[in-house]
Length: 76
Image 1: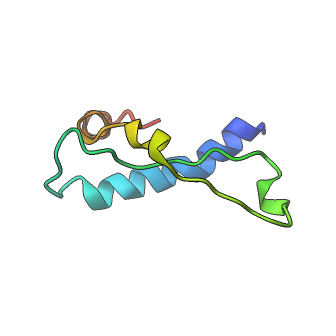
Image 2: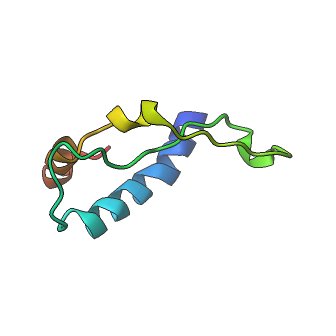
């Protein structure tokens, strides 16, 4: 199994759960939605873990687009 497959096995179920629990909420279609972090394959073993979150993530997938993928069963 490569790193991408491993990451997908973790994040795909989380994204599905996020959508299942939030898509019924009234959110503007331009609202910035879920942020999926990118980390290196040895991040879990790192002595010190640092995570940055900032304005660059604000332009990630908007609610309207995520809703389209969710409703058409194309989250993967």
